[in-house]
Length: 388
Ligand code: UD1
Image (cartoon, rainbow, N blue to C red):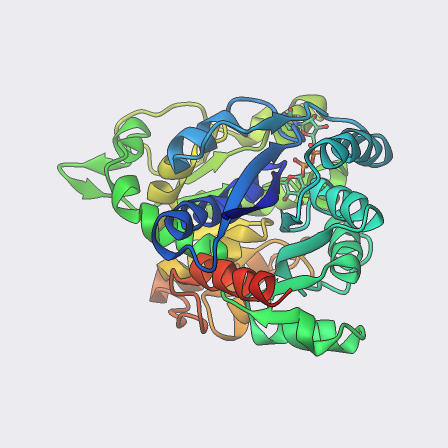
């Protein structure tokens, strides 16, 4: 008789979608090609609705070829406590109704910690994709989410060796830790060709006679950077100075757009996309995965406070200046193209000029960032299911 293992796969916010897409494809592949010992996997995709705007969610389902979620919780935006509580209440009902064998969560957003807590309290096993990353900065909501999730997970899939070390130091038993590689890299490598067909460079007038001009890309959304008026102003002033030498395209997160309006910061941006523009910061809406990948792949440099972009630029070999005091992804600095430039200094200008003059860091690809992570994760989970 065929036994179907029920796996609830949770996604809630933009960066989650890139981390679960390869897993869903690999499960399909497993069911068709590798089914063993009468075991197959019945996946349910649960979207918490933490991100709900088309530009933050639907476009990623389209670009990544993700199936429509089986279950949509529709929690929306709220304070951390309210958002987390709403997810927990709704997800508990889902778990009670579907009785899954496993809950899989990814990354470090509120949906990740909320769903892992619910699952463990119901005695359901939890797998965490991207376990063990630590910024050692507990003022970041993501750091709290990481610690909570890792402390209750049964299968901790890490992207790099230093994450294994962090988990060991926290007393997590060795047999729960699996260095499997980086799921987001699976997504990037499998979508690179498709992204190449995007017409975003033409749309933003970044090409001339089939030649791509030099430009930088900026993303900013961390509450610590954009919720404090003076902090945000200081960052924009430095970037404005850099943009005198190279135009910067800024696809801004919706929370950042709200802050720009609230602080009346429109003066920092140029809205003309005239054919020959060569300076200034252009503020645009958030882009879908394929357009953003194309934009990032052709940039001279990237400025960001995102976690995922530090990794993606490392794979693409594009210098990344991270506007933060710390990173939970040190391998992108020691091996990749990332440099921490802090938030309140003009270090960012010095490094940007270096990149303009000499090209910046080249880096190398970290171990197991090779496109095979989803396969390793599914194989490990199935090996353990067969043993149980
Ligand atoms: C969340 C994650 C962060 C991740 C980021 C990627 C947490 C604690 N933070 O931050 O780790 O890097 O996603 O984008 O989980 N909003 C909209 N439309 C949306 C979603 C959000 O307008 O679809 C606005 C709302 O005003 C909301 C604010 O953005 O209050 C913040 O959204 P939220 O999901 O709470 O956190 P993010 O800042 O997006």
